[in-house]
Image 1 (cartoon, rainbow, N blue to C red):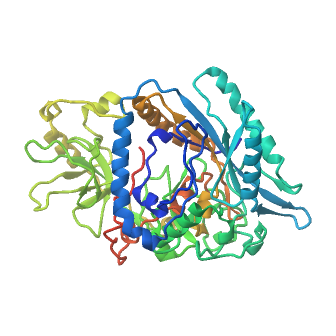
Image 2 (cartoon, helix red, strand yellow):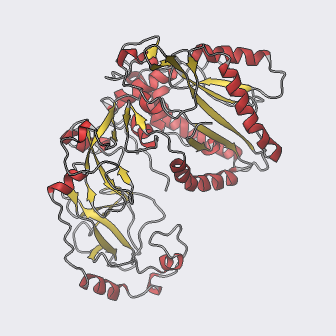
Image 3 (cartoon, helix red, strand yellow):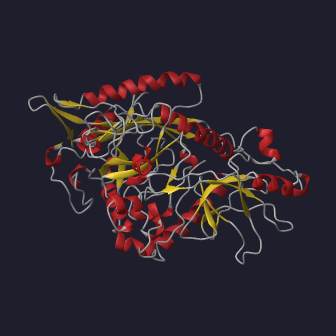
Amino acid sequence: MPSHNRVTIRTIQYWRPLLLAHLLLLSPNAAVSAFTLTMGLLKVGVPQPWQKSKKNLNYVREAGVRQFISTYNRVKDLKGDELLWGDEIEYGIFVLDHQNKKVRLSLRAKEIMDNLNQNEASHSYESEGCNWVPEYGAWMVEATPRRPYNGYSVDLLRVERNMRLRRKRILTELNDNEIAPTVAAFPMLGALGDDGSVPPVPVGGPVTESEYIGDGIINPHPRFAALSANIRKRRGEKVNIRVPLFHDVNTPEYADLPGLPPSTCCGEESILLWRFGKGDLSREKYGNGFIIVGCSSSSREFNDFGDPVTLQKWLVNVECDGCKGLFYRSAPGVIVPDADWPRNGDVVVGSEIPDVPGWIRLQNGYYLPMKCDDGEVKFLHKVSSATHANNQQKKALGSETPIYRGSVGNINDMPDLKNALETAVSSLSNENQAFNDEAKMFNLRPAIHMDAMAFGMGCCCLQITFQATDVDESRFLYDQLAVLAPIMMALTASTPVLKGRLADTDCRWGIITECVDDRRPAERGRKGGPDPEPEVAGEGYRRVY
């Protein structure tokens, strides 16, 4: 089994409209039987190039919303559906060159998959079987059980048995010098140049324009090349993936960074913080070879330039009759309808934004105004770092970050905010958070640079797919698994080597995130970048907290 798991619930899986528009598979050539239970939904179609698909984006959005509403209204009252679930395992196929002591990608995945599916069809009468579908890489094959598991305990015995069957069958199609291990990533992807695959393919090409891998390693299915090219074209440049490089004793990149002991930059008692997806500014200042990181045990914060940021605590107290707090903003002036908005009496942590006076950026990524537009009403009050939230709900939960909020009645039922504010402000100390150049350099780390979607989508994993009994159970499962997912991701982290170098991270999630980042420069907050075109503008996506 692969050592990296991913859990999804397809019944309520959300897709970004713009991502759908990258494909626009408008000409499917296969009908789907209403009684087919085969896992795997990928069909062959005719994708449109980016310049042509832009004209249809509004239609795709509107049609997608209508389809979602129609589907939801059709299934929202269904009860008692059978619990169906299954697993999907992704295999990477590699060629062993014993003479030259090299391992290369074997680009025979489609041939192997076709042969396997042909054999499965000839043995369809058997109760247990497999289904083989394409994956992003031309060296990758995905396998699922031919029929899903159900909710009976006896089906748990089928899982390992079917996994063993899949492995036996894929081994029958491999050459003597080929292997198909279930590993999260090919460690040498992008490090071997033109000699990285069998047959060899030249580096670069019109799809990825990569400096490290060739277009020939992408699966020939039309979906994958179209997705790669359209993400790059919408973004306006190649994707930019930078992962912190591990500091070993003789790592040459650290020779010019004295004062840093080997091992991770944060020490044994702390965790390195990699702010993936937020590195455009640091790239402009330091180039592709470096990245800004942080440490979980440190109160220091650094912006994307690597410059120190002073974090402060702020007491929320909107001095206006009837006002109970503030809504979060996703950007200055853009309100977010988040139910967990800070109420009067809450304490938030953030830093003032030099370029946007009167606003602070919070640690959770949101923004808050310090006062109203005319400056007459003050919203946030700077307090001491020793100040804690004076909020009844948080006290009841015993945490500074409540899991949920109930009804607390009228705001007047809370403790006297005026007295609490006066006490907090009076105790505000001059907490010096100045940082010297050595501290700044401590957060500037050499990086492993990658520039193509293949580095993320070329990772393999084990996925679990559920069909719940109804919509309510689907929501419940989703909420529970969203909490467990980070724990499972940490327990199964298995991607320590990228492009032939040892990374200072072990998890592939940040690589996948950055390899599909199609945001235009203005959508990434870059100054001087062109504004988003009206037909492609979107609100992006949010994390699951």
